[in-house]
Length: 440
Image (cartoon, rainbow, N blue to C red; front, top):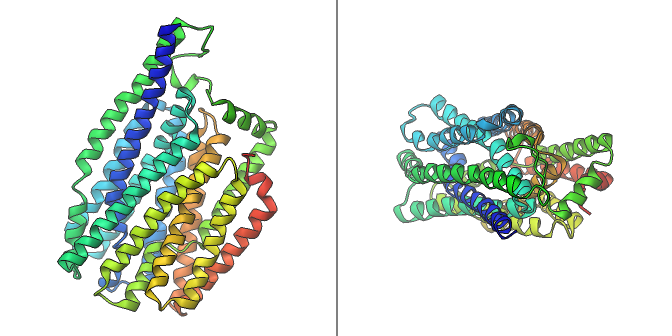
């Protein structure tokens, strides 16, 4: 009994080590690639690339990153032993493309590297989320805690990276093409630490099944497991999550319908969401080349707001899911409206960055929580992959659609279109809230 209790404690402890290590990896990786994205819009303007092409590049690269997730998710559902291989490859492409921008001497090389960065992110997201889901099931850790802590560290890195760059740009007066190239190179320094932590995380993840094997053989009457093959284990949700899953799966037809409604809602939100590099492109076109560090500060504020918003929202979601989503929808409705009216005020861009980040952090976290509840160990990769693919497709089409209008109209017209689209998303949520919110 004592040995079994100790193994259960160790199983939980190792599960938390996996979560914390992967979250630190996300902190470092976001430091790198979000730092690069904080100057991407300004860099395109510096190269005299029209904003429509920025919209295409940003939107299509996001779509590539999301689209690949469906196939990767489906693959790892069938071949679970390849999870960490895809995680390694994903981080390799995702992160290495950033310092390589230093050596990019033509526009097309830059485009390839931007696409490669998003492609790498798409490779690693489904297996990483699957690892989190499995840790939740096997180690009796609530998924809301896992995704909340991960998102907090993830977005903290997304804040520190641009924040670091804003200091560099301000102190050293970075403002030309060479300075931007140098910034991309500097961001690549933490890559070595990312892969050292990934190797350690892989070791801890394998230990989970070692402890499960011993629990199975020492006390089958206390803890039931089917087989040491992790793809055949029954889910071990916490009692709260188990009740939620039972409610959700009372009817397979209703479950599929609810999942479809959730995906459509997320696509509406994504379609009207103006990508932050596009907003910062507009910022730089207004305030010129001597305030680059302010644009980076806007990006940094958005990332820290996303971290705080995602963490707080995941903590409150079970108690007040309706309020969490409604509050975020209000933010995405009003931030483009504020830009329509006050876009010539520099402080408005700072405020909008906070709104933009909080809402995005909330949606990213709550969507993951809901999909984690919908899924089981046999289809978790596919469920996340399908969601990410359609979300990314909508983001790409929306970015292209909005920046297309920016060629022929003032930017405030683009903000107004975004406002209308998010109003539609808000009304859709009100109509289908009982299907979207599955946590009571």
